[in-house]
Length: 46
Image 1 (tube, rainbow, N blue to C red):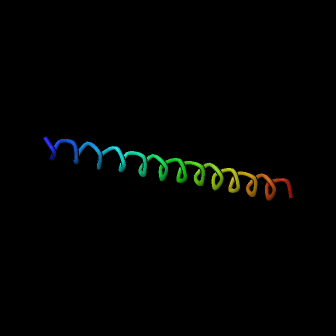
Image 2: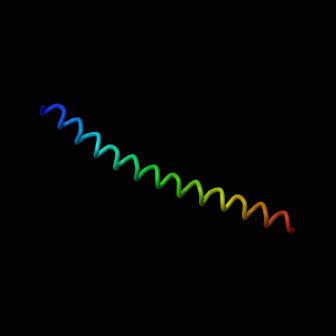
């Protein structure tokens, strides 16, 4: 019983940690793509 409780607790903590990392990477990817598109549009106008 204690092993099941321990693994459930570890899984819950890792899930929270992985979701935070996923959100950070998602936000960074969106910012990177936005910057690249803006630079491309800026150079296309010149």
